[in-house]
Image (tube, rainbow over all chains, first blue to last red; front, side):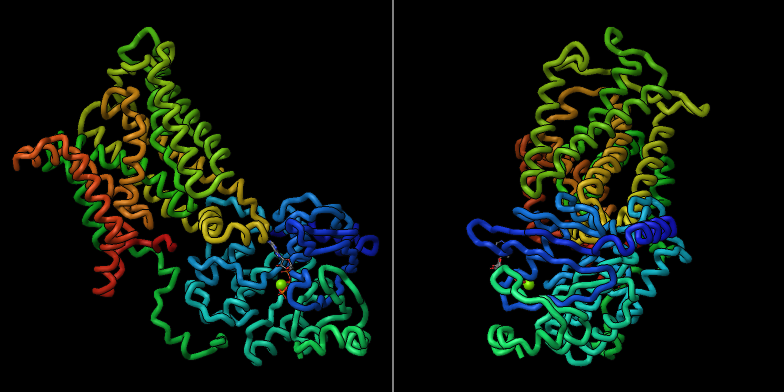
Length: 265
Length: 356
Ligand SMILES: Nc1ncnc2c1ncn2[C@@H]1O[C@H](COP(=O)(O)OP(=O)(O)OP(=O)(O)O)[C@@H](O)[C@H]1O
Ligand SMILES: [Mg+2]
């Protein structure tokens, strides 16, 4: 864990100021004849907080899938902290500091909450292949416990994930993405389906993330999106058609016609 | 949406059993069974010791290797008996047998480890092939490899001695004990089986074991957490192969022979039946299934003849039993047992079950 941490700090120092956290050039993704993404170019600097907005089917989730390596793009390049990761498998990108949450929770229903978070902590550490059980004072286990507490799941940490409520599963989804000191996180509609209280907790978690941890958030809820993001990217039909500060986007007549007026209030 | 905040009283009052019970407390039944197995030589004949209990524990270990892959990893492999067979065959080829023209007469401490190593390497290579497939295709590819190995050893006379195979394979003398002695050999089998069982229970809660269950539950998310899903699956095959290899060596020592019949397709499928009948949800299921299988194989024939039926029907009996159990309880006999236990509100198994 500490070795990984020092290495990533060294990497961070060497790439600081020189490279964008994320850089997409001409990314296109075809599903048969359907162009889910067309010629997407996007730069996000380290530590930046970006919101991606767009109507249903705009290609937001597909964009995330291409960035994390769940899908390979049909064409274009993807750079992560300056490194070309276009052809990297997902786990190699994750080991370089990228994380994501899923729009539809992707958890381990047969394992307990703490085991889920502990697994997430192991994934980017050397001990992912360990055949030794963690001791009570194990550093990764302690991190997992802290993280479980941070997303308000301490009381249910020994419960199987299959029986958690929807809101709790969404919170766990976020915990899995925050494990192992990420440098850049992709949040796919983390607020969808949450109660107002849970939404407030979510905004709190997002705004309290350490400053060096940049993220992109896909969010239909403008309240959440504009409160946590510094810049906004608008997508429509697989293309980016606008990028700017939250207040510019809100005031933009084209955006209002297409999106804000479109029943997504 | 029925979203509930973490502090909801509904959850603190939940009756759901925790997924991580206090470790170190072993249910009483385990002590009883353990004590009976250790004391068995006092009241069991050599036949019961070796041909019933010993054989069941060896088959149980091979089924355990399948349970490890299927129960924790979600990968159904029909090649586990073949892996055991390779370890057995190599023990005969490298070590001492009646076929002096082929056997190399290496000392046991060299022949046995090399035999097991080759079996593990083979199992790992099969794994590397099989993990690229899923579900029914994994079953097909491993079955094809098992069948290919059977025909290969049957037709190869130069190394595998063809149809006849090898006989006169006996456990060696070491640590001052003649392991050919029935009671000593029984204890050797018991120790290996207990060790394999405890090792699987232990590994299930290590990062590797948890990750394997994670791969079973959601491979895509595992990759998104930094795990190489393929590497994890292949490593699981290596671990399972090691268990199967130990069992393979014991198996040829128990039968004093190894031949194509040992690794035929029928017995390879029997391993799956054993694991499923016992219950693929917990390591102990493999041994329960194996004991039932051995008892049926040994006594069903006589029982059928006694009631005036033809003896060959015993396969039918096994098949029928398999159907009844699989339809009655997808988790095998173990599933039935836990259902009964849940009624009396007490846990029976140490550590937790594999959850599906
Ligand atoms: N795996 C897939 N195979 C085929 N088509 C897909 C696949 N994934 C997405 N699509 C299609 O690509 C388009 C973009 O989908 P995507 O999920 O990226 O949209 P989105 O912006 O995330 O929408 P939403 O707001 O509903 O989540 C849609 O038309 C969708 O049907
Ligand atoms: Mg989406």
